Each structure stands twice: as C-alpha cells, then as structure tokens.
Length: 357
Image 1: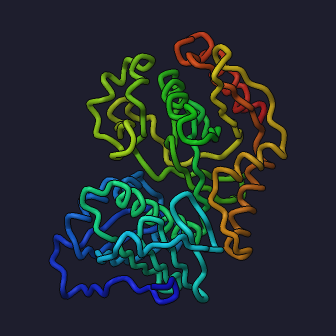
Image 2: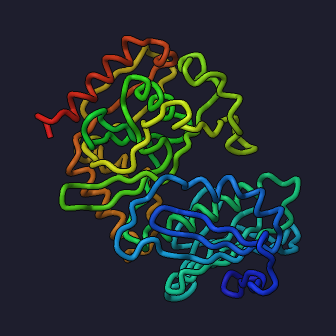
C-alpha cells in the first residue's frame, strides 16, 4: 500500500448515528468528526477536547473542518518507514501528495489525509485496543491536523508556556522541551499573582501592536511530584491522567486559581528554560536576538515546503525581534527555594513593566 494510494475508509453521515459524531472547538478552527468506531472516539476524546479555552473569533473564524475516522485491518509488518518531505516528527512522516493535499503515515500504521481547500480530513487507525502506542500516534495525527488548520487560519502554533503580567496584557513565552520544568515554573509564578495563556501550546500572529499570543486550552499538565511545591493545588494525583504514557495530570487551572487564565496578550519576552543536573536555584542571563529566534524555531513544527513554512518563520522572526530574552537555568531543587523564585518573579516583572515596553 503506497501513500499516494491511501484513502481512509469511506464514512458517510447517513450511516452514522448521533453518538458517532462529535464537535470540537479548536480556537480559530472547529472540528466536526465522524467516527466509525465510537470506542475509538472515546479513547481520543481527551485529546480532541483539550482545546477548550474561550476564543474571541475574528473575521472568517472559526474555520469549520470535517474529519472522518475509520478503523482498518493491517498487519504490523505491513508498515514500512516512510520518507515524507513536508514534515518529519518522532512519530510521523508527512508529504505533499498533490496541490492542497497533505498525507501523513505513522510508524504504528495510522494514516491521515488532509484536503486543505475542502477543509476536510480522513484518519485511518489500525487495530488499537490494548495498543496505547497506536492511540498515541493517532493523537499525533490529530495534532498535525490542528496545526495545519491553525496555520491555514493565519496562526502559528508554538509549543510553549506563558506567564502574563498581573496587571498588563504582556507576556513571557517559556520555551523548553517537554519535561524541562516549564509547567512547574508557570504554576510557581501563578501563585505569586501572575496569569497565563497555558503551559503547553499558544497560537501567535503578527498584529499592529506587536505579536499577539492567544490561549487554546484551559487545562494544564502537571507532574504529581510538584505537589510538594504547590500546596494549594492539593494532591495532584486526584486529577485525571493526561495520557497512558505519562504520569502528568490534567489540572483544571480555574479550579485551583480562578481568574488566572487569560485569552490573549502581547509577547514581550522569550525565556529559554534549561534543566540542569547540578547547580542551585534559578539563574538567568540575557538572551540575544539570534538565540531568541533559534529557541522559538525549536518550538514550532516548520514544514520543509517553503510556501507552508514562510508565514510560520515570519511570525517567529517578528516575535524574536519584538521581544527581549532571558536564558534561565533550573537547578534540581529550584522550586523549593521560595526566595529564588521570588527574585525571578521580580526580574520578569521588571522586564515586562510599563516603563520598559
């Protein structure tokens, strides 16, 4: 079976009951999904429902997409390593199959076809019960679909946390690989009066007043180990698990700190967060322009296709140029040092203060 021959199983609305259809708000996009297997819909529900932050719609928003999801029988040995040229991730290889058509094959056998002009997609999932790796890969396919939907709506998805000034609509973007402590840092600042757009993903676009960042999710992903530093969150293990392959939990931000989730802010600071095996507390230094653009580029999935990459790169460049930067080193027990976190909070406040805008 070749990528060019891929077609997801045909699924028609007439063949589906109401329980087989789901509608999801994805910020500037809206997704209407049709499922041939309602159990698969439930298995992916936490992922497909996560983009639930309030969205102030602009002209032409939301862009409404349809998704048909079907199950296919496929032997494990059938799946070969693909060679996609549009985008390559840990799980997926993605290529432009034809003008307006993007196809993605996963190493576990999932296959996604995106028809960009029609704002429609189809996803084929191989036998998945008792296969959390297949569900994980299907989630990655949904992440790809959301990223393309957002990009086509004029937004750049950035993998990063944000902290927003307590009184001003200016934010710092915290950039780091997963597991580097940006969520714990975000919560540590929230308890000191800061606000946030979220801890994992934001959407950005150039605007007359700078680069605007918008929230897409209400919930944050927090490791239960952080309970020792964040007493007000209580036992973090009481929250639902984020996924079968991590111990992180979906924490209801508004339930812990009401009013701390905001929907938009202007990006004025880029912070590179680096976990260190040695050293004490939090230490920071200035981050130069080239470093800011480099770290932002690592937080965005940039296609190899010039036309698709150009608007994303332009947003990254504008963000790096308009913002100042800090390089933050996080020691092993940094969040146990309350005075150290206080000092960093004061430093952020100074960077985002009105007289330095």
